[in-house]
Length: 478
Ligand code: DSN
Image (tube, rainbow, N blue to C red; front, side, top):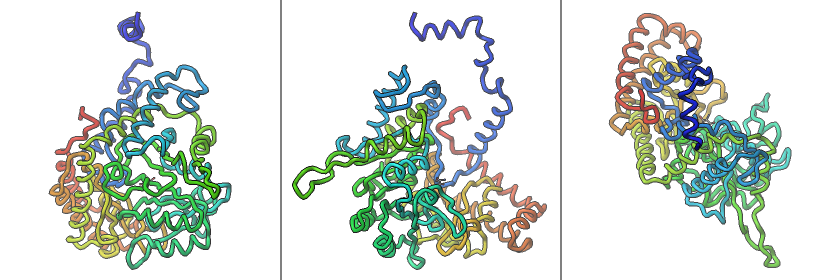
């Protein structure tokens, strides 16, 4: 009897009441109900967190598949556990598709698809290629960088990158609001970093990888791109390409790339150049990075995630993905233009990518209050520091993005409607603040007053009824 027939027989046998076969709704109604509420929230609200997206049904099916049951420590064909014939096939396909999605030749680039997410991927690269307490430079968090690029404050080494390595931030220029490449060069020439990270968490412009490369070459530094935010745009060929200049490229797979929550590391391999005697010099990143991921930092790979990445990478190589990413950018540009017209200050004056960086100081609202009022009316975004902010704890702006709304099918006209809702929400917030004064706690208290709640509830209803017109493709049963 083959395995499938055998499964059918068990499911119609005396094991029908076996407790592990119960659906979630019966086995754990408490968790089921919370998930249902979250699903409703995602469907009824406007998801504008720039790093979020909605996965496809096929990706979701991988995530809840039997692949989650399997241990497969090691690499394809060299596992520490038996029974990995099919897991090897999944991981190998995932690697091939990841290279194809970014138009990379397997003789020039390798890829590790095992990192659990973006932060572990970054830490694995540092661990592999930079000695303990070696020097790293990354864009400062308040200037739009990510925690893992080395964030620390005057009183605390916040990110492990700054604890286990010596971190020196580079900044944006306060006049242009763009990365200050000249200053980065000046600092790098003094600091001599082992590795420079070209990557952002909140920065709306194309990165100049060529300039990063020149600065690295002057200082013998490695160049690592963390393209997490823009990897979907890179796959679609719509932003500058880190693979042209970098030694290593990391990415999460769940942002513009629209895959599962996970991480990937690409590294150069093959011949790097020739030495003075004409002998070939080879890249040596492959073993270092693979061994840093496992056994250095992680245990068994999450195979259900790896299958889901494989699906997402296949989707990313399809023409429809490029159309999607083009719409993501058009929508972000419509969002920036709409907010600008309504009187909000857009950092850098616009956007080239999927996100808009809004400075709320022009309407005298803090980022925290802006985030709060939008949340009250079912619009999700996040508060964010803006150029000139002194503290990451009390940021003056918000970051809004269009990947998720675009996945739901929104176009520029819809974004116009979204802008009008945001503007209405900010007007309520300013009226609340007039009564509450500047403190966020007082703001939240006064927001509960009936006169404001009536306006909030009315706007929330409008937002939700608009959002419901757009399906969530990966959750077809809604
Ligand atoms: N939290 C992600 C972001 O929002 O950019 C990065 O880890």
